[in-house]
Length: 147
Image 1 (cartoon, rainbow, N blue to C red):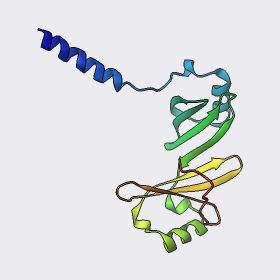
Image 2 (image 1 turned 90 degrees about the vertical axis):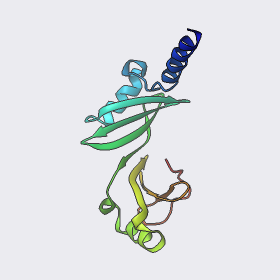
Image 3 (image 1 turned 90 degrees about the horizontal axis):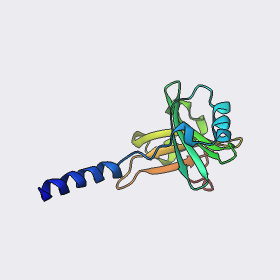
Image 4 (image 1 turned 30 degrees about the horizontal axis):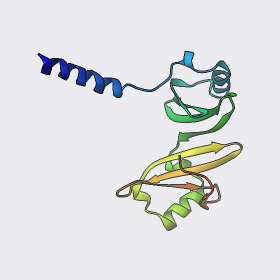
């Protein structure tokens, strides 16, 4: 009987530990929700997480995956969304052709920080994937951290 009780408790603990850490909309300050909905009026399937002093929203707009980081005052710090290879500027495509193996592209995202757009290209590599950030000019943006 003790073994069965222990087993049931162990299974319950595993499921509790795996529980999603997403926040409900009611857990998000209204100023943050307002800042978010002002920018992303068509957002669907929104999931929220709190990290330190920012909130991260993961959502979709017209079936495109997005992520956004917002300050506690509702200001959007940055956001990103998935794009196709063809949506990359020609200069970025040329850099990839010249310096990287385009057959190993795993994911491409446009990152918007303030008024600046960057292009994050994730290349399949072993043991870890490699994310490279490009400016519109095709140059790598070493001062922008991969996200």
